[in-house]
Amino acid sequence: MGILVKALIGALVVVLIGLLAKTRNYYIAGLVPLFPTFALIAHYIVGNERSIAALKTTLVFGMWAVLPYLVYLISLYFLINSLRLSLALGAAVLCWIAAAWLLITLWGWWQGR
Image 1 (tube, rainbow, N blue to C red):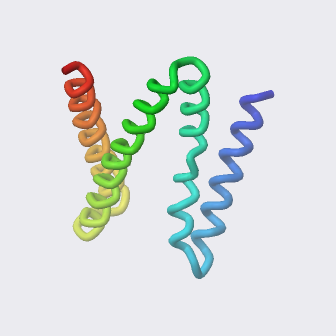
Image 2: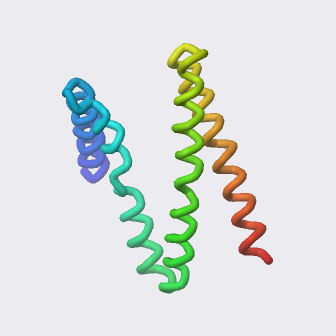
Image 3: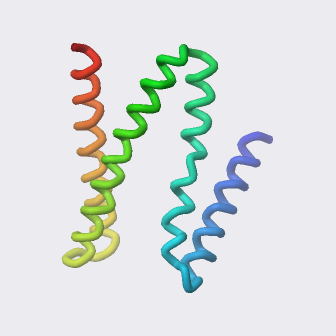
């Protein structure tokens, strides 16, 4: 039952994005997927199962985790000028993966000092 509800919520979010994309304020469709659904779940679990210090560490890492998304957006912004949309999206995802890998590597190095 729980998985059905989650799938329904996901479908509703996709419909909402699709509807917003057709409005005069189409750019708001880019805000909807950034609602912190998974962040709320992660913070609740870490906050309940670990210490407040661990939650604060998770929050600081989450602040830095915005950078790979920014890399994705910037790379897609420039790539759509020279590539088909599907290729630009794929390349932007690869940029996100590289930035996320770099962030995780640097974070591990910094935490291990």
